[in-house]
Image (cartoon, rainbow, N blue to C red; front, side):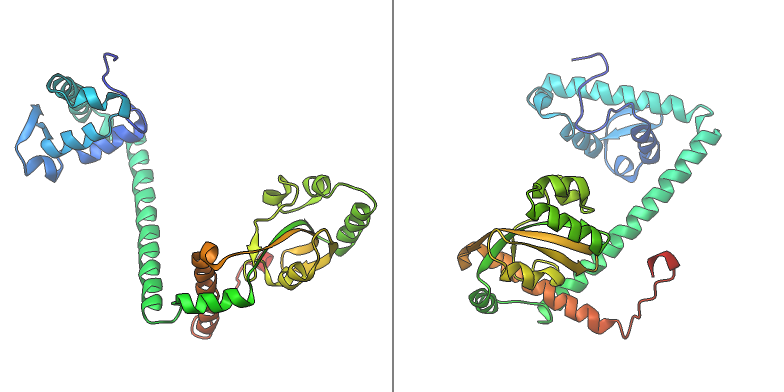
Length: 284
């Protein structure tokens, strides 16, 4: 243990963000509305604050800080922090341009985070409403019917290029002996799969982009084909495997797949009410 106190989970207590956060929390309602554990000048350490910060202590120290002596020593740590805060509040630090600038930045970040959280919350509740109203809800029976028609999972590797000519040349070279994985690593514009030799995640019908889906399920294992055009560019693909899945092993997956398909159709129906306009010419 150091003189400064116990390691906390997360950033160090002396960090700027933590320090500014302490300034924002100084004199909080929680401290005013309950008997304080300790006072440092006009600042108080409330029981709620003490217990919350105690819970932030790293796991290796939890056993000790929950003993009577450990709790006393941890209070010393908080008193030291509060003493620093009291001195800071009594100084000219809050009137400095740096403080004002940092506070403006923090406030803007908090407002942006709040807007994003609000958008996420209202969207989640809207989706739950669609599910409850039966718009996207999918039952086990519907999922089982889908699985009867599409019980297979395929493994596909691909190379994404910007032009048909480049895809044709790569397919020709691969058929002549070039390693598919090496070609993907060197040439594919899909950097996420390129690092793994072009290997895509195993997919059921409905989980591959539509432009490649029928091709991938028609091909035989080991076949190489292309170029195939999609909205992303031109693809050379190789079918790596095909296997049949038991419904019990993919039930939740099929339900998610069908709910996504229903949501996509619902969103298309909304575009008459909420027309999409791409304003920036570079994206047209």
